[in-house]
Length: 203
Image (cartoon, rainbow, N blue to C red):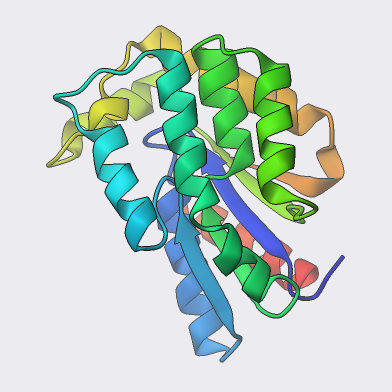
């Protein structure tokens, strides 16, 4: 595996993925190891504008528009990814697995279309490792209630998130060596240590 890998943090809402990604960022800064951090949707100026549109709780898009908006946001980040690929550690909050989990398993978009579009956009860029954060529906609901501000993707039915999470697990099962399942129902410190231990082996 590359010593300057692309590492992705995936998971449904309330799974702790962003928390753990930020903890990794602090750890790498302390170690003075160079990295870049992106989030999807979002990343650069244009992608962040698209993010606001996607997550606006006042709006509602059909599933194909939703897919294309996410991919438009990703497209705006490709140059940045290519510029840093194999040169710096790249940390991403959601990436191609999210598109498959949400748009295919959650919303029913044809998987072949998603795969073809991702292949076209990424053009050889590959994720080296993924931390997949999972959470039970009870804890997810509680954490969403504790949020001060909710976006459009925080307000789906529980059955939707359940389908998405099961989709994530199906994706991970196909390539177990490149995934670590992080059970965020456990105490945070357990997962923080587990992630850092794995991170050190990766980099």
